[in-house]
Length: 255
Image (cartoon, rainbow, N blue to C red; front, side, top):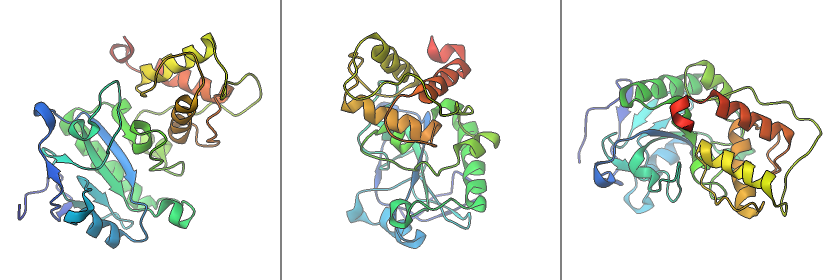
């Protein structure tokens, strides 16, 4: 492919060869946020368009707010890898990916710039409107791949995006003392926690055992919704924030 008209009017086009058809005629109903985790935006853009990288994304948002589209929204980009949401795998077939230039751990997780987040919000609103993607289906890469991925990280301003009309978010419950669930715990309280996380969409086995897989999902949840402390311990704040999110969901989502 030598070029295409951008799906988003504000985007430049640089075609990546790394894409294919969506499986079984799948239509995108998830929007996945990533950070690039590379030293520069130019390096990230080149990597996402290099055939031997075997990765790509639909969009890349530079630090100055410039947006580049690399894969048509109708095609399957290679951005999410192995993962699941709401019991469904092959996340790439069901999603649109936005890579946001930020070095992440290479530079101690710097903040995202205001102009960059403004551009992300405008792009995301446009994508969600055109594909009828509901707010609770705007996710972090770490949500669909707990333990394997941590992007876009705990510095990503989900609360600000929600104020701008993107994503599902509630004010996190304050961190305080009280009961908590952690590695090695078992029984009905753990099963209830796993069930709530599963209802929200996270992929984990409901077995009543707070195992490593449960810890990783709790960390992913905290990274997105309670970033003040990401430790994999289901404390009162984490559980209360999860309750608030579930209550705030549309009735047809939790039924």
